[in-house]
Length: 201
Image 1 (tube, rainbow, N blue to C red):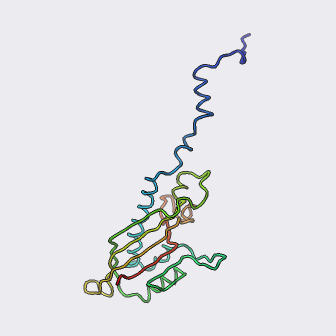
Image 2 (image 1 turned 180 degrees about the vertical axis):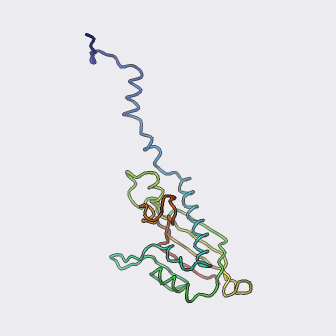
Image 3 (image 1 turned 45 degrees about the horizontal axis):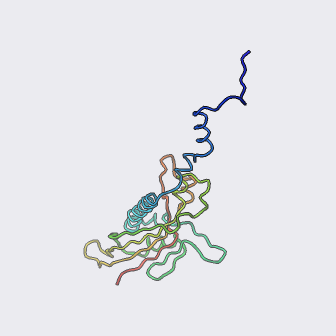
């Protein structure tokens, strides 16, 4: 009967390499999960460009969707409420109220974003340990600054005013959780937590 004496068997070079891979080399997931500076630039730029495109389109012609760009209204233990909306010096703490004012009180507007700047505010909102790459890509916040011009009251002859708009964008938690996005992963991945709008004199 043939037998195998493991104690006396010498390890082959294949076995040694296998052991080195198993015990000394990081797994592909560990080496590929961390985001690079290029990743941060790509993600933040995409978020800012999408905001500038969709948000000002909503102000111009889809005012019934304005509230959907903001985080749900929440009051913290310290009494501070988000979203924080400062529109030309007036503080508005409810996105639904902001939308209602635009629908009922604002005249015709046509916004044209001319300059866009974005940088990552917080690259890691929650502990990154154990998160997938997709989760890490949605675990940050941005500061977005937009400047441009807005035509008021009338499409061609109305007064033209300059504006500056600053936003803090955070992940849409419902979208991250996969609710309401469908199989195509559509929906707003980032929402406005804070906004300061000013006309330029």
